[in-house]
Image 1: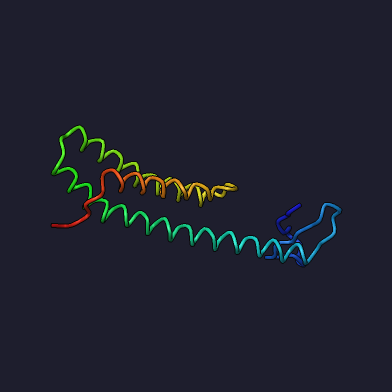
Image 2: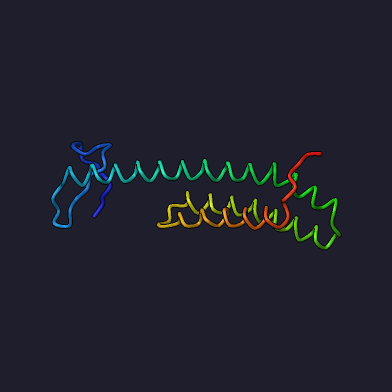
Length: 130
């Protein structure tokens, strides 16, 4: 069982970990801190990857969307713009899910990847600026 430090002078400012039997354990203390650091590292790396994916969706995806819109009829352009908007919002949603503190949300990272594949296969083929 994980417990926050009390107001006692011996534990001020430290996180103490007590086993279910009530015994303090420095090994559990170390593992808890290591787990927190690893969780933070994974969140930071996931955020970096998602921000790069969002940048890729904004720049080349925007050029591909513009080229698609100039060569197709309005109903298809609305579908392309909607898909592009969902692609951008998916990145923000996954960032929220990762940093909200819920357990086992890293499979959500596959959702923007799938959206990238769908968008760039159907709508964003021509990403040239010319």
